[in-house]
Image (tube, rainbow, N blue to C red):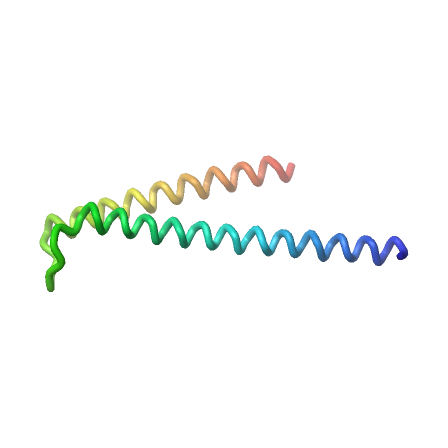
Length: 87
């Protein structure tokens, strides 16, 4: 095996590892969304009905806003860590 082939195979392996990591992150995020949906539903929904009352709507909105804030904080922190690692 010559050096060019070896480098090409290493680059392909690195790209495959990167793609796997991205898919794992997507799966983790979707699992978080599912978990958070369950948490907000359990916290805010007393009894299912055909309409949301104002208290339930406010609870769901607040729950969602906390989720968004937390996700943005984690995403920003992760981005900072990646950028520091790249330098």
